[in-house]
Image (cartoon, helix red, strand yellow):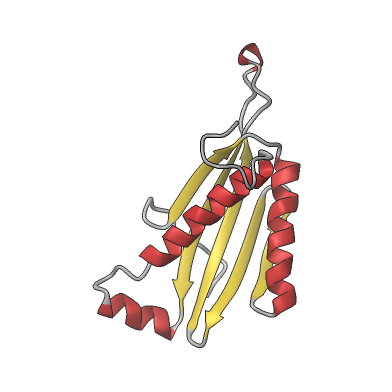
Length: 140
C-alpha cells in the first residue's frame, strides 16, 4: 500500500471531538500503538508528534488495516470556561486478499466491521483522555 492516501470520505473516516490537549491524546495513541508493535501485529509507518500517526495492523493472513490518525487542536472558548478540544480523525483502509474477497461476498460492505471497531476505539480514547474511563455513559 502506498503512502499517498486517497481523499477521505464519510464512509472510511470517523471524527471525534475530545476535551483534552493533543499531548495527552498523543501519549494515549502512541501507548496503544506500541502494544501492537510489541505483539508483532502492528507497524508504525509514519508519525508526526501530536499531529498524525500512520499505523498498519495485521489482522491475520491476507488482511491488514491502515489507520491514519490526525489530531487538530480546536480554538478554546474561554468565555464558556472550555478547556479546549482536539479533533481526532481516523481514516480506515483495509487491504489484502481477504479484504478483497470479503468485499465481493458482502457486496461492498467489508468496511463495516472495521468502522464499528474504530468508532468504539475512538469512544474509548475519548473516555480515557477526558478521564472518564470505566464510568458509565452519561456520568460526569
